Image 1 (cartoon, helix red, strand yellow):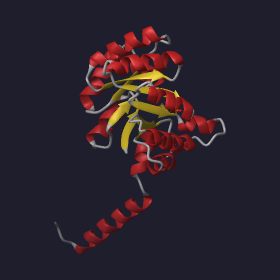
Image 2 (tube, protein in one colour; image 1 turned 45 degrees about the vertical axis):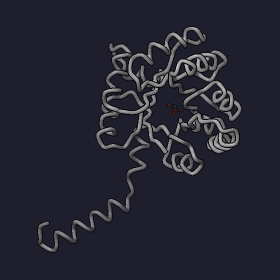
Image 3 (cartoon, helix red, strand yellow; image 1 turned 90 degrees about the vertical axis):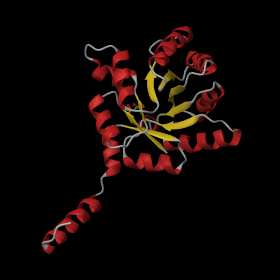
Length: 218
Ligand code: G3P
């Protein structure tokens, strides 16, 4: 399963990329607004593309299909690794079909149901982003749709990749793996929670203490 970092913060991105922990980046307008300051979005995306060699999702702001297509073409022109992120609306799917037809990679976002995911796949989406945590927030079992979408895509032979999003804790990531998601996008906090284990820390401490006691050097 591919792991993407869900952030536009270049310091977080550099740290994870330098450690070889991530395969790509997802952003959204909220994440971009947090780091933008006086910089243009294209500068931020260009910087991210320099640091990470993998899919970098950049989201459109327009809400009509023509506007999304035009923004999508511009975003895609910034770098070959840019994936144009489009909302799961009627216009978003129109734009997805048009951009996919031009060979532009797309990520259809704000997916909250399996039927929406089917429609995105039929529109040629490269990735579908079901929002697990936000479904949990409103009393559903968000992870269920990952399993359902996997089943539907496999049954009908869709190649759209399932990108589990809005993951809030390591258990979400584990379940996404077990359900066969192709990718998961995580905030930094969750990425490092995956890495850490108290028994690893305790074991290492013990190994080092025992070795020190031997008085030898490697
Ligand atoms: O990738 C989508 C993600 O950014 C949404 O996460 O935690 O805001 O629901 P969250």
